Image (tube, rainbow, N blue to C red; front, side, top):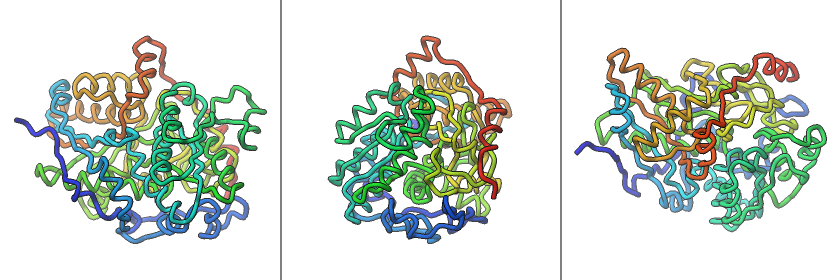
Length: 450
């Protein structure tokens, strides 16, 4: 029989997270205070983050220990399986070998609990009673609700309004785990009220939902904020994915030539690629490709500059590829990729040429998702279907060129709570949308100049 599943035992869960800042040729420029525009320090962040996470945010140590309590919960679903996509390879008639790391086996159905669990743990250790956070498609919100439930903490989630309507079952999952969920923009915060006054039909965005969650945390002494992507410590926690994948490739005596992840904020892309990028930095020949929506083309059309991480300007300035913090992308079904910028670590690596990026249209992405579902049997989330599209494109290029390459992508979540998106696609209700360059220029023109 062909080997299809490459499985590790519970004892092989990584005991440390990998910090790519120890190996990067150039570190990102420091975050700047939104008021003074001076580099921020730990005290500036302590109002909404526990000190343990602040220390991880700035650490340049290569390896960070994973607490035993976190490892114990990780063992509910980790290590996740690595699959060889034999049926997809056959359907494409490609000489390429295609592998995917499947993060949909987590209780929340995505990679997001890899960071929600440690974030809840460190906040619990710091005596925090409640977490305020945002969510796009609902994968992060449900993961934070799960983590809060496991550690006995309250969780309030601001869910982007367009996804709140599109994905009711993710909201129900959050509420099942005990979270309170508001459609964002909401009337609960000043940021939300201001957005609704300007546009009562505002569909919301991740940047706006972040504003609401940060405001909530900053105005309640018992509450901290948690972010599902972008920040250094979040990407750090996700490296368990790539570290496991490295062990799994050793078992089959193989190694990827190409590594692919969808990219909205950058956490699942970082999780699968950062351990391998360490090899690339030290001389190994491989490619890493970030795949983003053409309707929210942050890396491929954004500018590398300081910008707020949210709409209201409550967060520090971060050095990122950005479309402008008040950029409101259209309501595509890949709600988790509707963010105006990307993680500073991902942006710096892309800027330095260690990563590539491509933007894909929605219709081609769903076509790839259906092919994957009908060959490999798993229905993927619309977000991670972008990675599938990227992998298929590379496999077809291998076919065209007659080259046998090993392709790895991160299947970062299943789509069983996203079936309305598939219904809309199959009913012909979806269309492609490429964000106009002039709209991007308009949003970028409003940014402060440093």
